[in-house]
Image 1: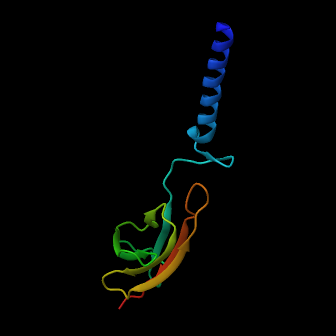
Image 2: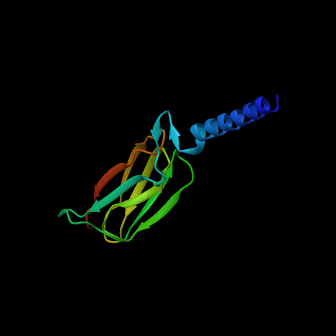
Length: 126
């Protein structure tokens, strides 16, 4: 009787461990293995009218008409606007000596991450 009880106790521990690991221990959702990286919601690239990349510009943005947020993009590479946030992004890009440009983009997501939207804007000098 003791050995039978020990068997059921061990079997229940193994089953509970298997259930826990398969349910949440490996980062998988519906058979999809998710990565732990944080993906940008929007990548903005800004060019001048000659097609040359600009740097040191400001992006004022809102997500789903929420709080106004600001970021300074100091490099000429694409500038990441927020991370892992889906929704309707509205933004204004400005740089001293150039006309501001506004835009909108909708960011969706899958079971793991947002689907990064890439936006290229051209600013005209005054």
